[in-house]
Amino acid sequence: MATPDASNTGITGITSIAQQEQNMERFRRLILVGFGQGDLAVVDELFAPDFVEHQAGVRPPSAAGVKGIIAYLRQALPDLTYTIEDLAASGDKVWGRLRSRGTHRGTFMGIPPTGAQIAITVIDICRFVDGKIVEHWGVPDRLSLLEQIGASVRPPQTPA
Image (cartoon, rainbow, N blue to C red; front, side, top):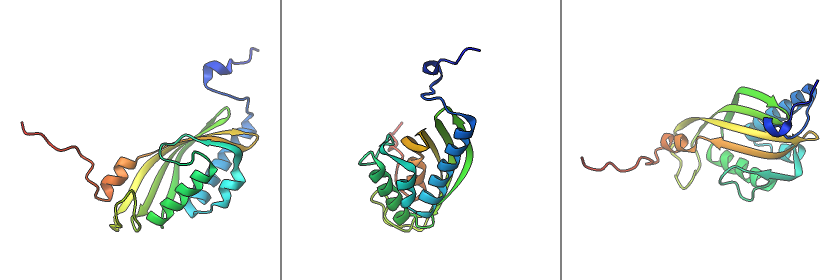
């Protein structure tokens, strides 16, 4: 039986089903305990020393930047929770579709607290090597969040 050509599948490493299951559990831990409970030690536990963050706005693009985002989100939305709605693994990557909910009780992107309830979708992809997260791509629906806390995000209407 021929081995699939990883270069054509987007799979960058050979990963067993058992490893994929372990990686999905690590992903769950990052989301539910790291982000959902604000436990920054989870980042140290799960991330490789050479981890690279690809999500726009995370600076520095490293584990330190991820810790900063967790802390920032927790101050703006202290009751922030996450629900993992879909989770899949392919090769060395774990893909998740999440629902994030919270109450705007701290400044977020320059907007003072409004007390508004928010609920947004987040898409996350993590790449693993030897059980550690080495890369992350995230797409939180920031536009929806901003609309929910009252930011004016619609372009001005032009007269007809």
